[in-house]
Length: 157
Image (tube, rainbow, N blue to C red):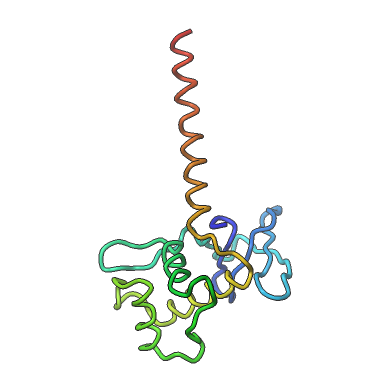
């Protein structure tokens, strides 16, 4: 999920990678229409797995933040209306999600976008933020172990 859900700079919402074209990506808008459109190399396209939130110590991957938000909201849409909430309300709410977030580098607009993305993912039934990450890590570990096993066999021969 993390590799296939994308944010495109300058365009609202989230997009799901459907296919790769010749010099572009075919993406599906995660909204009620589910329209497909091309995303070109000139667009700044970012996978959700490549995004992190600033904290006082280290950066926290977006998937961890989304998982915290899901636990706070018990798997439902956000209880805060990000369109109407003021900056102080957003920061107070976000401090429940990520208590040690960097208050200087994380702006109200970042929190609004995070809540908007969370709501989009929940509306589309995408709720397994951490489980798929663990499955991907296990798959990567297996592919790393296989070449080692082959090299041992070649030494014996």
